[in-house]
Image 1 (cartoon, rainbow, N blue to C red):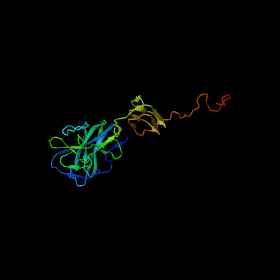
Image 2 (image 1 turned 30 degrees about the horizontal axis):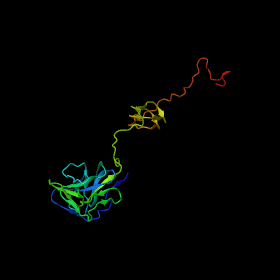
Image 3 (image 1 turned 180 degrees about the horizontal axis):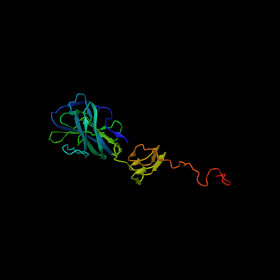
Image 4 (image 1 turned 135 degrees about the vertical axis):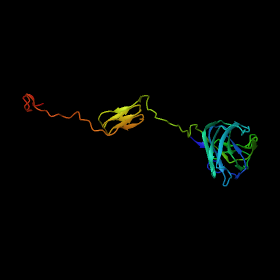
Length: 268
């Protein structure tokens, strides 16, 4: 798995400034690849020192065909909220496929304020690590777009401090929430119970047990399982059971006045 952006850890190579337009504004920059299918996992915004931005900015993704201007009034494909601080800030979301020559528009939506810069070269800017990933050139679609309030989307050649985060692995960073237990085999046990005196007993379970309860006199119990146990409960220390192997003294009875071995019984 490899993650890429256009600018990496460095700031954009041209000056950026912050401005307060006094009202809601959406700014966006266009990104694409020529032959590689990427999955977009987030957006970034470079915040210059002293930029008059709110505490949080919504970063989002829209897509459009190559050489087609995005409509910033349409719904976001994915989005996240970034806490504003000096330098790069980012928001992440579930991977969204980006096919070659499809344009990903990363936008910043703020109640007021935006970042602005003017790249000196009208051409594209390739990813700093050499990946097949580009900040678009000032072509037919434009490198950038903005929308103030409910106005139409306007094409520009600016850079609004935005960057894209992509990966070559759609499962990268995916968190799978696990609730409960996963058995190691198709066999599942409702409960395993040790009811009598067990010293050093080993309970081997190939599947999954719902509960394991030691009800009486369990000393040094070892529970070995290739699956998973729901709970292990010891019901408390109970008095030891009588030892079934205790010898009872023999009292001589009739015909057994003594215990002296008789002939033929010496080896007994």
